[in-house]
Image (cartoon, rainbow over the protein chains, first blue to last red):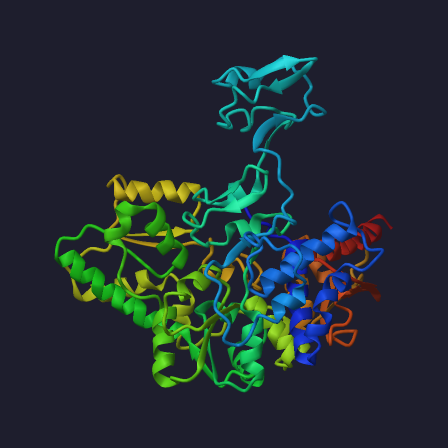
Length: 468
Length: 91
């Protein structure tokens, strides 16, 4: 469950990034950062919450997260944004947990339930809803169907083509419904809270919350400082980047150099290496009688296995991710540089904490704000017209899910081995069940490749590209 | 509606408008009835305001038959086109 249409939290998040980066470039951020909520939500504008002051308080939380701080555990409500800003330098410590929930923004959604919308119920003679409920939870009260929540098991049988007037609806808690592993829950006060022992940082709650209460802790300001203080910075560009910005790869790379990146490394090259290593590992394991190898390209899937699928751990590929390999290469080539990975993924932020070759991670949205602020844009209007992604020598890896294709090629020289590949496009409750079936041998595959985001990395939670 | 009916849809494109929603609007052709497409002329233009983005609160921008739409979304642009097409079809 995500918001695939134009939506206000996404817009406000991006607007704040742009404003923050532009004020930074002008050298006025310290003076204006406390006023940003008033710029974004000026007097007289229509409040989203109870009043405009509440809206501005939420924006303050967004600024706090944009500065890399944790809105979920902050106990000092008296700090102003400029006080957080003063704590940041180009060498600031990295946020350990990339996600946070701002209580000020959380609307404390009512408990999830299935309900009869009273104005739609016609108290029909068929009473199919009553007959179909296995728990006798539906009765007629005052001439309308009514669900007794104590008896309702939320099985959803009454939802599917039962009421011809569409009077029965499921009312979800969007963040909870989106999380495939139950890592976000309402706490005792009713606010959403992330359990970081369970969270895989897939970013589904971040995209699902209609109030934008789930925020990511950004490294935008340390990166802006790195770029403007003349330090050597390497951009490690994710394979999915060619679909994120208009104008094509070459123009993007020129823009990156213009805003201060001295070197650019395409992670797509490392993705080919990683896929090739995974193919070798697969062949080696199969020859030794192994039954299954799970690809380790997607960091959300790797965390899913580590935290929720212990039985799959032995099958997880030991091949480092393309980002880790590219970071290693960057460190070897430019030992004094700051290596900054750029992509549409939140889980990469978490993965990067254990990659010695990666110093910072920014999202494509944040890069967009940097290009606007530091004058990286050199696009003509025609460049914005949607086109097919660049055709180039590394297109193979850019498509993501490359390992299976690489395996198929590698196995041509191993006629005794048969590839039974399963590709899982997006982690959700259904695909989790499927993964359990592989483990219990009820579904046959000897190689599984899982992408946390449906449609692949280009549809990541911080993507600028229009979802498929 | 005559065959020469034209609706000029002008999408303003700088990186700011692109980030704030015009990336979606550029795909508008996929969201309109096929029979309308010959009548819709999609154009991309440089930003109408100085995109140091002091006017961020009003971005992104689009213009339909000369009328400027602020805070444009795919849905609002589609709605504006639909309204014009419906008017033309009734006439």
